[in-house]
Image 1: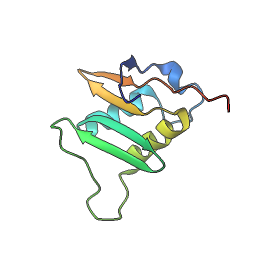
Image 2: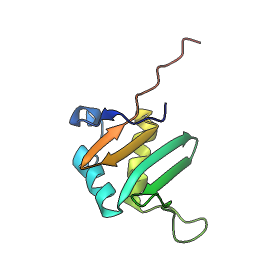
Image 3: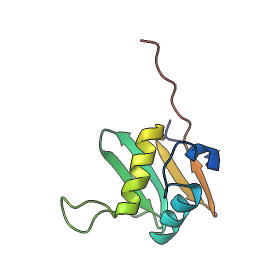
Image 4: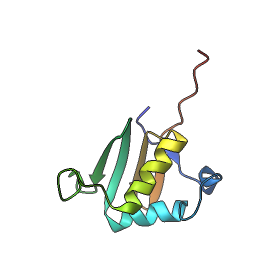
Length: 101
């Protein structure tokens, strides 16, 4: 579920509003030198820098920068558990299926 092996495509943004796009997310990852963002549900995210160090807000109780928060919103809306950036390519996790309950 948390593996990110599917390349992120422009089609993944079919229902997204600007500025969200594949290019926007790539620029966010490059700007903050991020390796991946993992979403655990609720309002729990883990943001990892390329040096494997966590990227956290500067002050306790503070939010992440607005552009990272937009990536969080996209992940929640699209049910993406992980986005990673590797060698200039963005990958995402598979979208879990809906239960029939």
